[in-house]
Image (cartoon, rainbow, N blue to C red; front, side, top):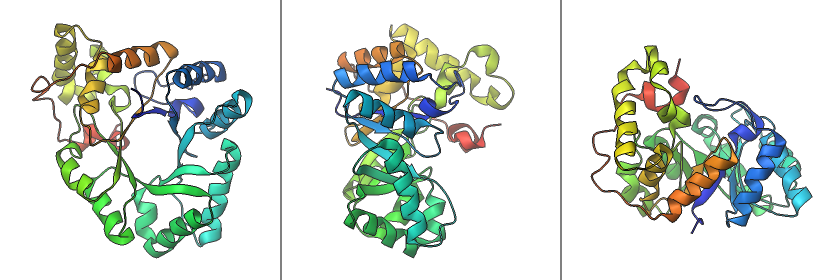
Length: 287
């Protein structure tokens, strides 16, 4: 039932999210991973940029003897040669304490765009040498997917934002699927923006205040937790093979699992919530 679920881990190693914004303790992380494993969840999304996340996950897997499939990310940087890239991958491998990284994503399309030939050759070489199983890129814009594809000229894994507000990739799912890409969605809760209380929806976020409040009202009318409404909106798109879900505590994980079990589906119920303003839907623009 939860094969498509990928556990997000940014807050395993750093303060993360606009609504909670804290790093979880190792004890909290272990509780979440225990429960996830019990429910059959076998994938975790992490990155070197997530502070100590890789190390915490590696320690858990070593202590518990439970080996998750890991998606991690090569940090943005000015790489001069294959050796520089390989060293970063070996760092992740050491922290995670795994024989092979299942999926390596470039954390920034710019890393690829700056040195396309080096990155293309290096990703293939990492795969040939058995350090990684698959590779791809984490993106913010649809055109970045096509740019990567035209350079690589073969299927890859792509991770992109998708949520009630941000539907840019959802509109293009058919095109992306035709390229035989493995599609992973992140930012289902828009880093917690949907959960902000009304008093914090001022200043920069004032333009979407009414939409957030309307979304909360919709959840109330449907007698659903807001998180469930947001999660099911993305879950209903079956072309998305993996959905990355971050949680702030064990209770949130259990609520989200119960939501998926409920097998709720929507059609027109969330029309009118899309936001085109990239200052809102792209967290790196927030201020």
